[in-house]
Each structure stands twice: as C-alpha cells, then as structure tokens.
Length: 243
Image (tube, rainbow, N blue to C red; front, top):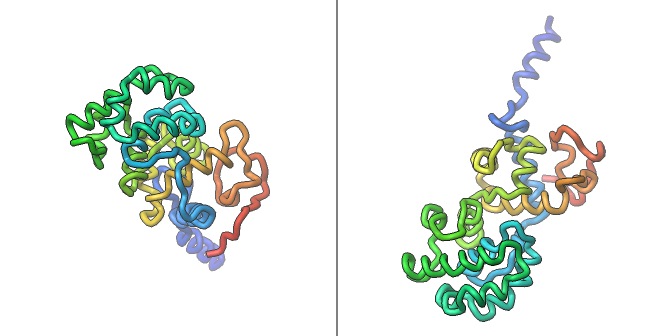
C-alpha cells in the first residue's frame, strides 16, 4: 500500500505536457537551450543590406531557394537598394535581374508595386508593424514576420515549409495551417529563446530534420524528440549539451 502511494505521488510530481504539444515545459526549454548552444547567433541565408532589400529578398524567395535569390539580388541591390532606385529601374529591368527565379514576372511586378506603396504611404521606409506590412503588394504574413524579426528585432515566427513540417513531425506545435503552427510556437517557446526560434527551426529543418529523410543521427535533440518515426534510435548530439 505504501509503495503504491509513493508511486502515485511520483507520477503526480511529473511535469505535465504543455497544452497542444507532446512536450513538457522543461523539455521544450531544453530543446531551445540546445539550439542556442549549437547556434548562438543564428542568421537567415538571404543576403540584404537594409530593411528594404530584406523585404524584397523575402518576397522573391517564395517558391525559390535562398541561394538562387542571392545570385539574382547581388547585382540588383548593387544598383537599386532603395524604393526610389527600384522604381526608377522599372518592372522590365527588375525582371531582367530576377529572370532565373521562379514566378519572376509576377515578382517583378510586386517589387515595383511595393516600392511605389512604400514611397506613397510610408515615406520610402519599411514599416515596423505587421498590419502595414501585409498591405504591401506581394507581402504575406510569413514575409512580414521575417522582416519584423530580422530587420526590427521583434519576436515573430515565420512559418515556412520547414517549420510547418517540424512542428507537426515532432509534435512540438502540431497544426493544420501555418497560422495554427505559428500561434502554438509563439505560445510554447520560452520567451528568452523566442527572438531566434524561427531561425533555429528553419536551419534544423533545412539541414537535419529534412523532408524525405531526417538525419536523426546528426540531431542534437534526438533523445528528446517525440516523432512517431525516426531513422535511428541512437541519439548522437554533435555538441556538448551540458547546462
């Protein structure tokens, strides 16, 4: 009887899962602590020189690789790094620079239209709030969140295909839509890690927790991961993960 009571008390003291995830709060904290140790200063891979060029680069990155976007924007940003210069360049010439990027015709149109809108409505400056950003041509919620986070240092979760996959695959923030995954991550990620969380998750998805074959043997959170299927049962962190 006494043993049963002790066991019951031990179970009661275990941390419960955070609502909507498969993880306890200490487990979530440990996941992001390890990401911090691995990449203390994570950065996106799009190249930019100002909030405006970042905005343009993110708009161009839809259904394209960062590598491909960077190749196109290096010469473009060398001559057009402000809305005024981009507008003066014109849609046709912008199109010539970004012709190697998917959907380039529509993107060239959007770049010119958002440049016009920035000049007309914001004095040529990129606004630092989501409501204003998503009103710009070609700018959706994900793009706005990237700009808010990277250009203005605001905690935001830009849910791309990598974050959407990880949120659902490992049960950290399961959701049927990017917005649902974003809402959960903003709620469950510890505040001290929120600023860099979307970069950590994107890079983890791009290089480790890949779509077709996740490289679990390379994963620093393999022993914490609650994915239904793994490619290995052996956690092998690449870095020291002591507190």
